[in-house]
Length: 134
Ligand code: MN
Image (tube, rainbow, N blue to C red; front, top):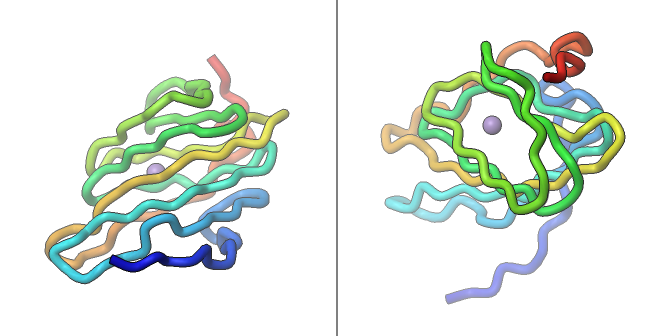
């Protein structure tokens, strides 16, 4: 085994996120056959991912704050600490903080076995989409 010391936090790039988003790598990619990926993702109020999908799906587990998540065509759902959301492979969605709260979640996913893209990224989530609360 080895202890992997805390790595510097990484700013989420503007082409993939709206607002201030930072992530900490919890499980860095290991040699195959491991395909596990885990990040802690920290969203400032109003910050969110762009629309995207994951080749092998994704599990999100909220640890702090208050957040929002939406699948393409579905309602905007509120998510809270302790909530776990599974998004199946290829399902387009976004996730982020509520307008008035920070939110941190663990993001857990796997790289595809064929070494293809782990995620597909699309347009930013507009203020109208973000504000379309139930
Ligand atoms: Mn996702």
